[in-house]
Image (cartoon, rainbow, N blue to C red; front, side, top):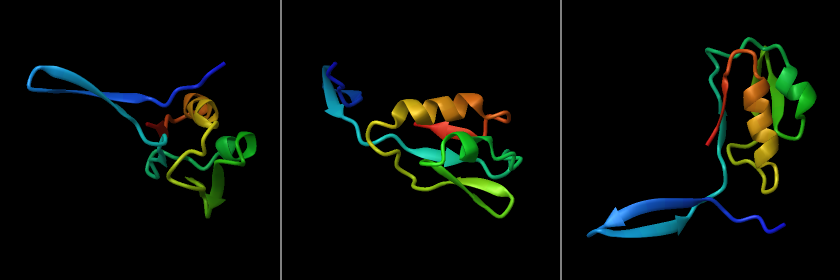
Length: 84
């Protein structure tokens, strides 16, 4: 299976252009995070605990881990994880 990078669409003078997107970004809303550790336990390659809150190891999701990031966001009990 060939995996293509996400494309961003914009219109300039009535012409539609598609630009190759960058890597997926991940963030955690520290106010929403309850520190349950679910993301850290299930996805240790993406998240670590800092004090009583989870944080991403990197702001950019490693190539090939986009689905893992989406799964973490979907499994978060407070929806604190955002993958974009």
